[in-house]
Figure (tube, rainbow over the protein chains, first blue to last red):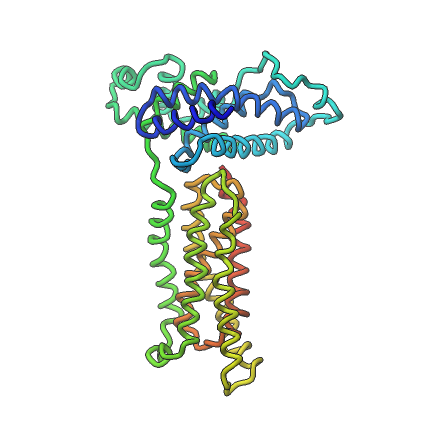
Length: 181
Length: 212
């Protein structure tokens, strides 16, 4: 546990100083922990645990857009779990208004280990459609076609700087749309 | 979009660097300050006997108290812009202005006074104090909330309340140079009511706009 968290802190420090590969590895490494936390939260709230992936993506977006509030001299895990907890409570509250679930005692009968099957996330993809064309194209090129920033710039005859701006703005407005929902 | 695809996209955006929360807060407050100062000079202005008043330690104490509220509130709001922290260990800073006021009241009690206690407490400007401080604090409150929105406060109502204290402290500093009531009893009563009002507005606004 301790080692794992020290590794996260190291990766995040490398990411902040510009190492994109370290950042990619960090996000991959924390996702299972976020997924487990989301499942536990859903189970405790008496909601279907297979809905966890939307929450995981919500948390990842918040981690990305708020990472400048992490103090590089502090351990990363407490910061990460504070963000995760905040987004989890937020989405349970939002779901609570829409979905009626009989709480009963079924939370306690759930296996403590997360089951394998998970409904694919749909909220980010749905909001993607409502973005301005340029931002959506850039996001899709990088996310779905796994193109690099350079390839994306060539494909759309844009400068790399313009691709970076569209990418960041797209992620920021996706997050804003998810919050308003 | 699959989570792996999202992660790849986020990693591609790693080069983007957001401004530090402190910088955004400072810029927002600097941008809003002229609005509050303009309200002050348009509606109130500095009291005419300023030069004499400056020799009265109770006049000077007003600025010490209001700044002793505003400055710790700025520090606490920056602290609360991080998601993993609590008020623990920081909330005591807010007792500084309270302690200063109590010390002021005690020393005023020990001096011979021309006016009875109740007259000093009620003063001449209580209604103005309770309207001017909240009004002048509004632009600053908006600025503080904009600054904090750039952070990640996980207790939005608390962070909003601190933003209220911050803006009320700054607005009260302006107002203190207009008001001719210098008794610490007046300050402890009416400035406190005005500050509480702004704090409540901040908490209410914060619980809405500071969620992320």
